[in-house]
Length: 234
Image (cartoon, rainbow, N blue to C red; front, side, top):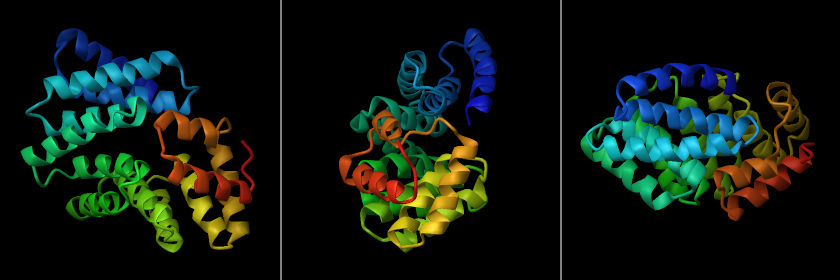
């Protein structure tokens, strides 16, 4: 969430003063800026920070799968350059085929780009490789996106519920949970998820969120419609 991301940046910026080409530091900085951009006002400085540090992580991290994964995630989610991002994810898993975070971070932008089956496969693979990974909620988001796109609402709701179990304080997961619940006719549960979303992130806007992270219309439009049925007003 934004407070943690802002705090992390103070340390990462100090690391980059000491070592300007430190690929992993650029990768973490890009992710922190991505979080701040998507959830703390969508400020231009954070958009630029996510993109610039993301590309630096990819450029300097050709032998570092962790740096590649962080950088690729930010480039995909903020710049929406999926060609560069997906190539970097592929490079990361070539370097280390068992590196779970590459699959975890890769699954979400794949799902939001409409690569449904691949998003599900990568998300499930990341969780199999690291079942207790603190970032497994990101893989669950990718699995959600793939299943929601395919109209598998029960599976999408289960994926969102697992994301919440992994990280109950992450607001975005409740927006993911509410939509398939609404599609399944479980309106009261969907409304409860929206209420929790607003408790954690009062400024949440589905329209701004979809635009910020480049969700394709085939995913964004039914998600927006379902959240409206759950009581989320944009």
